Length: 309
Image (tube, rainbow, N blue to C red; front, side, top):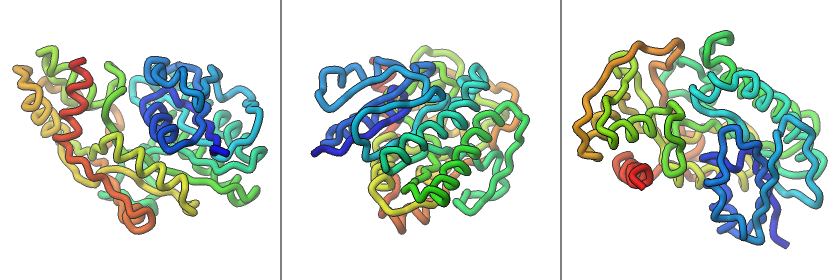
């Protein structure tokens, strides 16, 4: 019999790509999403697939799934600065109540549980690159605190279920990921810069653009998540591209690839905007035999073509 997977937040950017990947690997997938930031457009091509099912529900409410489940992948959460600014309480609730409910289902079904955590748990890091052993530098009451703390709590709850109830749990700390199905206007650098460049508008860079980021193409990330899902690893693990560049350099690359006449516009630096963001993926390389393989310019060309369409 085909293995059955529940993906919370499966109508979002990452979740919908996971659906495609897992169905192609002959799993049956149930998506649960309240569509607060996800969209049916991301999964409409799966609607008539016999191995796919969609349930519109807020995961902070009690979850009931009939039949067996082999995996629960908890990806539900607003995940961009604009989203958690607009939905601060919902962000905290999905990280706490939603994680509790998803873990409850995994416990009841004796299923493997995988939590989508984030590089944001490191806050504005004081070490670079960031290893899994780094505890972070987080402003709990700052504008990003609702997202940072919801994920930090979710990690703590996941490990508590692992240690207390002996559930097979996984925690993936996802660093900046990009590609097709990212939303316009969600506040993240790559979709914002591409949309501005294609429209010939100024590229809005915060501060002097010297802050650094590392960007992983979506197919690389999904492969890493799958490798973690079927592994025996229970400790948190970083997944992301270890190549680092400044935000200003990213803007310049996108201007070049789009052949845009846009100019750089410098805006004030947001509160608690991380100065550096780069994963130490030594553990992923060793334990999963995984590293990001798609070059930034190659991935950006695909993303630009998506936004052109």
